[in-house]
Length: 336
Image (cartoon, rainbow, N blue to C red):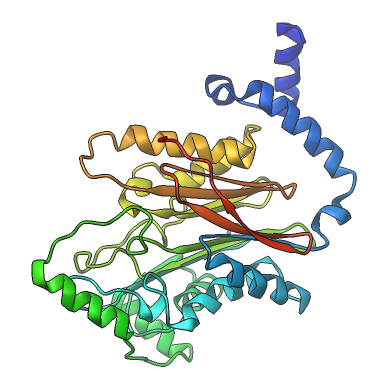
């Protein structure tokens, strides 16, 4: 392809100069041709639905999401029901009321959800509520707002029918007592004290939604909120393009607006894996001042049912449920 023809091709696709600068051109051409072929058979692409989610908890979460679709649910129902299952198990150290507490001994929860329409809901610093993702959905659907926090979020949850649940898992209580001995704040890479579950779903119509829920960093400062409930950082959905979410040290992701960046890269022709890789590199660059080590990992899907991931270090994986198969996939990573 000549340089002139190449530029004409890119112009027709609407690819921006950003794609040129990122070195995505040759791959973008291939991906766009592949996507064009797939557009001819949308029914075949979407009929079984798609659910992708972070870490091995994503396997049962994906099952719950696909079940919701098969029972007549849409992409938002899938995104809610998938992570709601994990919240409700009350066994995870990083999700729901079983999550490890902050340094004052309180468990505080964050969650968000985003719909194909562009509407979104979020709750932060929520205490004693079992299903923050459902409260986030209610914020999206029953209020004019996007985010409610703390006491106000809890009050809203109770008004909508939730009940207070003063639950702490034995593991969380034990971990907190052990932490108090030295009271040191040292997150460990790929150890589930700095994690979450993020999910992206695509229903049989091809519509895309996403969700994210977490108890946040173990032994964090009281009042701390990470990237998970922040639209554009921990989660972003554009129904015309795709969606992205992630996991890891939230402060590093917040500084880079990573989920939004991934979606914009896909808009410019990048495959989900390529977009996630560039987002990790951006996180690495923006957080170059940090002396402590950290992990981040992102997952993404595009409008044509393709999915991918990338992380800073080895050890990040994600679950993908597509075409009747639900498998755990190890992510490629930056720092070898």
